[in-house]
Amino acid sequence: MVSKLISRKKIPELVDAMIGDFIVVATTNKNNVPTLTEISSSDEVLFDTELPMISIKKLFHPAKQDLFKFNRTTGVIKSCLEESDIGVEKKIVVFGVRPCDITGNNVLDEIFKEYFRDEFYNTLRERALIIGINCLQPCYENCFCESMNSNDPKSGYDLMLTEIAKDNFIIVPNTDGGKRILRLYPDLFQEPTDEDFEKYVRTLELKKNSFKKDILVEGLPSELEDKFESRAWKKYTKECLFCGSCTFVCPTCYCFNVKDKISIDLKTGIRQREWDSCYYPEFASVAGGHDFRHEKERRFRYRYLHKFIDIPRRYNVEGCVGCGRCITYCPADIDVRDVVEDVRGEM
Amino acid sequence: MRAIVTHDRGISIPHEAKIVNIRELTDTTKLFELKFVQNHLNPLFEHVPGQFVEVSIYGIGEVPISITSPPTKRGSFELGIRNVGNVTNAIHNKKKGDIVGIRGPFGNGFPIADYKGKDLLFVTGGLGYLPLRSVFRYAIDKKEDYGKIFLLYGDRCPSDILFPEENDEYEVREDIDFQCTVDRDDDRCWEGNLGVVTNLFSKIADQIDPNNTIAMICGPPIMYKFVIIELEKLGLDGDHIYLSLERKMKCGVGKCCHCGVGDKFVCIDGPVFTLRQIRTLPEALM
Image (cartoon, rainbow over all chains, first blue to last red):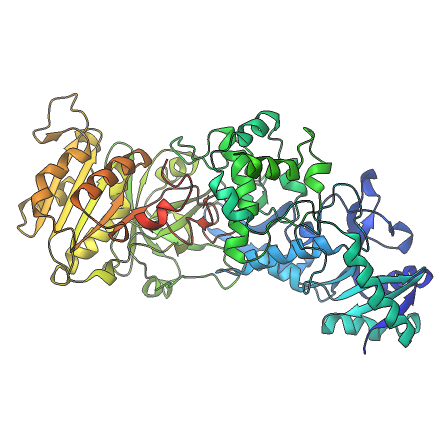
């Protein structure tokens, strides 16, 4: 077995060792909210914290992404993939990613390779190694990952840490990249004993019992489809501020707008894409003024149906991972669980 | 079928194309003929009628524009563009020899090649004429492969009528039944039909064989609802009615989500859908 044992006090040492060989990204207290950011020392890392405000999606699909530079009369000068540090050899290690975020990012992996491979997302994604940290109980009251089957991802990470007893973690590799990290720092790890493995198995058993389901997703797509005209949509549309916060903090929201920015010389410029939100008024409007989702209710409903019907049908994965961020950061206190239950419960 | 001229640096990067000809179609609509600057791309560029390209005006933005020329025209392609927004306004200010960016072609297009031997019924309103032109010009160029061609065209007023000289040709041909109407004729210069495009159905109804006819429709959203009623009256099956949907196709490659309709993206699953497909998509027709 290639799994290793690591003690809690060695984990900061592991992080510091990796900083020498990789670009390490972890959850820190930057801006006074839990934020994923590049670190230069393990002192910055919030080890036992809940979720960062924005999931790992921002590492592969940044809020603003430069696409290419252009000259206004002659056209493309060069792709920003070529000149940024995106192309450098050094890999990124993302430390301490929760299972729901790993599952959420697996959805984006599907979307950004479907049909046409998006060069920006995939280049950044292929460059990253993800070290997950297992959740042994719901991390806070808004978490409903168990309902969305997202707390035990089978792929999308390279190493997974699981705390098996106070101060000891089993670290299990899931890819060759993960194994490589284990080989790089042999002094930090111990060989797990048979007893450790027994504890590991028992921990995973206990984990299963610590989570309960808030909503039942089985059959949800067809139930919601039947409730397209539900009055509950109207009720929540009245409460919603359409600020788009939920879409930005959602690990599976990815839509973007594309804009050209002209430099001060007025001759050259840069094409950029930036996160957009389907809650915004002009999201579906076309030139000439026709707006295909002009009514707020249609915009509100579209996002829910996209998560709970369209993504599962199209990509065969859950479109919501139950991380609860949209609940935490909603200024109008709308709870996705209530919306779904109200809609499906209405006669 | 999908010969996409992808940039070797990735799908977000356009290829430069030169405007080789500009023709004014109406007060607000121009036809641009384009050729790729890199000459070797021109023979590689193939499209299915009904597909679109993303046109970049560097510094202003990018918009999806349907290809107006049929696939039978090789070496260059045409885009009919109405001046309705920031980017299309910038395109209208371009001159012969200027450079624009092109990505694509994207979307599925009309599956006209699958329906050899069938009668074809084209219904179009307003600017929908431009995408549909690539389909019916293809059918006319390959007339020996198809049965009778019906083309119903409605527009707002006589001065908005697109390609009048081509329409005159269709009018005199025996093997094409061309019917045209305008909503209003304020200048009293129009001798043809007045009213909406659905009025034209009565003129062709007795010649349509519902079991052997494929309908292809492109027009403003409001038109679809009424045209579908007429087509169903004629007895056409939902699988034999094809409609091209308009949406905000920002990226063209199924990523940006602006053109989502139900679990479909108009840019990669469409823009052409059968009526049967559309019936399962919420808010597709509106």
